Image (cartoon, rainbow, N blue to C red; front, side):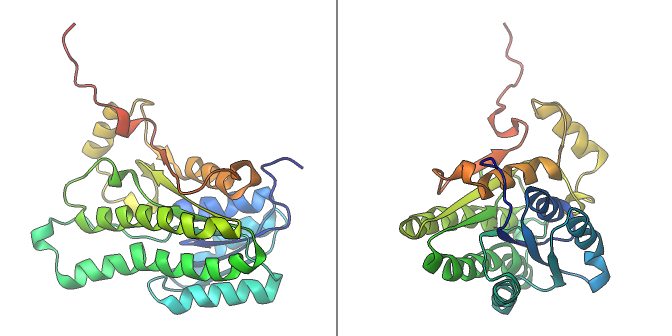
Length: 259
């Protein structure tokens, strides 16, 4: 075994049926973890991730649910404990995107987006910590976003949620450390996912390709690999950190100065 092996642990992933969530669930399974997960949709919408997890010889329990409801997190925790007796990794990932100017954002828009994108992370962190603290070990990983560093107009609610996730991550990391639990965040930049499909117009794609130093939009597997690192013992001395995975986008201030 190496520091990156996860044979035996149990992982929970929210938003597990597509994009970064599906890539993460499958990557954790490849590393050896059994996976419980939740997503919004019908039972059939989770078939692809269930089959992918079971194809590598791991067990899965992937069900529909709303992470904006605290009962969903409690259900996931109870199910994992009943089925496998442990929760070692909890990845809060479920989110949705809303592109809208702040002055056009209704109360319902604002609270509806924060329900899944921020409140759901609180519910997941709390459920995970309650299980992990008595056991003296665990990894909580929150998917934030590069938008909390590089501001994007018309994403006020989304960026507010992501900034809140980083503060939640850092504060909980301090509380969790004495219990042997680490808490970290991964901040994706521009990534090809169903979440972004309509927002990434040809013009947006061209702009990203020009501004990202590595010259391309990323893919979900490239985020999942970092999450596997944080879930493994290789990250055992890291906590309270946000790892930006964006091809260099947020550090690029190049404007073409004359020599």
